[in-house]
Image (cartoon, rainbow, N blue to C red; front, top):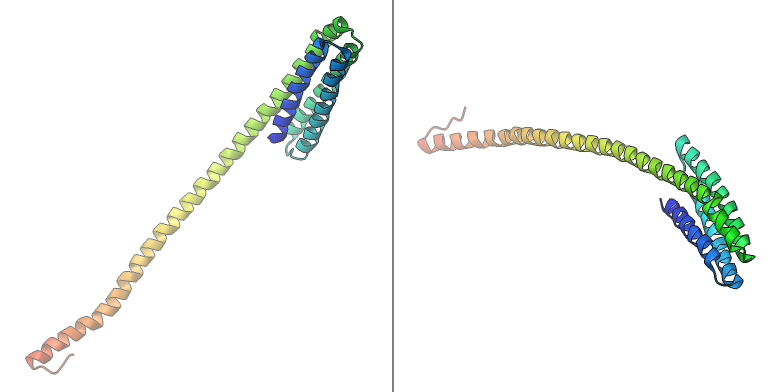
Length: 185
């Protein structure tokens, strides 16, 4: 999940950087935003690489591949905007930003939404399976506890009778002895 959040944050910051590079007052400031975007691009690729190791089902892999394709297209558009802005061609950069750049942004957001939705659904399925397992474990423990209590009660009654019968005979014999009968049969 942290990798998806890192990808989403990097993408969002790259989008803001694309806007800022166009609005930069000087080519030097524009280059600063371009450098920042390149660093964020590196973070995005690193998060993608890390997330790729955690994929476990075909739908997740499919959604992730769609996200990578969408991001690659978005990055191509961002690079075009960056190049134009550094050359101080802000009007042309704006055309790319609101045209092909916007379409790439929508595709990227759609892919990110599909990826996160699948993660939520997979998480819910795993959670439901864990709940079933936990409920089964609780049922088993309660059953074993009840069986243990019944066995303990039965064993307690059995042992108390084994102990109390000889004591009861001793008491009977003692009473007979007091009355003068020396037989305990």
